[in-house]
Length: 247
Image (tube, rainbow, N blue to C red; front, side, top):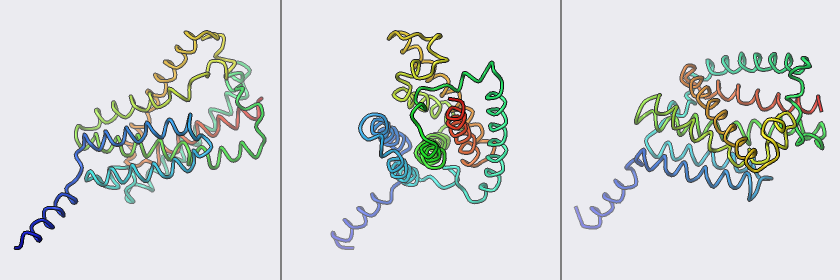
């Protein structure tokens, strides 16, 4: 074999060699950091486009690290089961939200200053496009798909859940800034001071981290990303609907 052929073979071997798990997780976290800043600071109006591009990019990272569609929770063999889980969860959330909206004691929890100027068309856009694509697609592919799949291959489901949920909680730091004043039900709890605002952020990180653990468990039990996707969409979308209808 000539020197040129040896060099070509070495180059092909380097290209085909899978990315290490640590490197893949590092790339994933870096991409998500940029995406978080883009969504909340630099270009929030391009959230749907950002979600599609980042989701595709992160799946590419998973495959480059030797992962499969099954590692992402998107294996064709489990999609029907995941869809059944999703439909049941959506129904349960719908019933729970309807009950909470009808009870005077809990109706005030849906009040949110951010819904004040929304039209019916804008709410429909959020429920049918922004939430399922801009929020659910990106977050589920990133945290319960790619990150969970990468870490589980290396360290098992417990570590995958812990890492994914911790990062999912931190993902919500920027979106939660100002939450204590946006939701009137939270203002008496946290007040309007900087310290109260910081406590609200910590509470959101803890709550979303716990929600992330629940989503991971749904992913594990169903074997499909569709189960947490369904619950995630229902919680966010029905929240928009209830907040809009009860404003």
